[in-house]
Length: 126
Image (tube, rainbow, N blue to C red):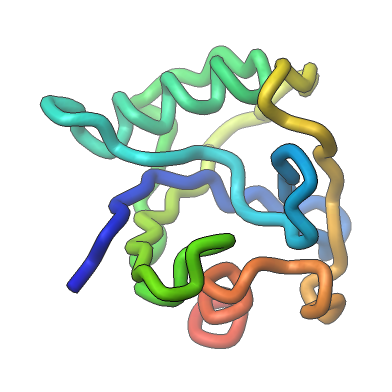
């Protein structure tokens, strides 16, 4: 059973993956978030990236990559489905908003820093 369905951005730069951290969570995860009732993936991703990182991305340039299902973080007893998209253009300048406590590009081999479902994405797709 999938508890959460999310739309997420997979953005690589110099071999590193763009990841965010919220509050006191230990691990980083992909920018984006839960798909709200009545939203499609791209609408959700557009909204979440605007809220989290002040990014104004054009939904037509959001290209579907892959869907991965894995343990939710930090709710490890629940399951998350990450619907992953890349952006076909430059994402522009990132500005963290209140719910995000850190954003950085992390080497995909630094698995101990990365949430479980994102590590699964890395193993299966990247």
